[in-house]
Amino acid sequence: MQTTTLYDQDFYAWTQRQIELLQAQQWEQVDIDNLIEELDSLGKQQRQELRNRLGVLLGHLLKWRYQPEARSKSWRATIREHRQELRRHLQENSSLKPYLSEAIEIGYEKGLNLVDRETPLNPEQLPQSCPFSEAEIFEEPLELEY
Image (tube, rainbow, N blue to C red; front, side, top):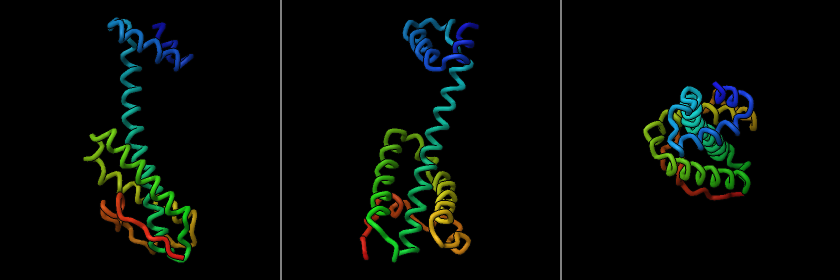
């Protein structure tokens, strides 16, 4: 009961206490219900991170493709950075790879929203499903033309 109270009052202290209990193999004192909830939440955060990064990347790829006159070093850097972070994220969380096609679909919706916020383009006039292959999303080099 005390660990549940600690969970509600001081989350960081609760995490440290759970680590101590697990390391000491004091299974009966571990706050199992909250630990399960937190582990589930961590897994969901990894999926959310994948979708969010894909959203930014796909939005910038759309801007790059459909606004060539506005291409900038900043856009190219954003694309490069998000590609690197996505590759790293998938390398560190390889079990997310089967989820990638679904994450791309959701990320593409986010990308369309980004285009709507940041450009004069009408997202309804853009492809409504992701027009980029995985190779284009993760690896295709970008030429900066002014």
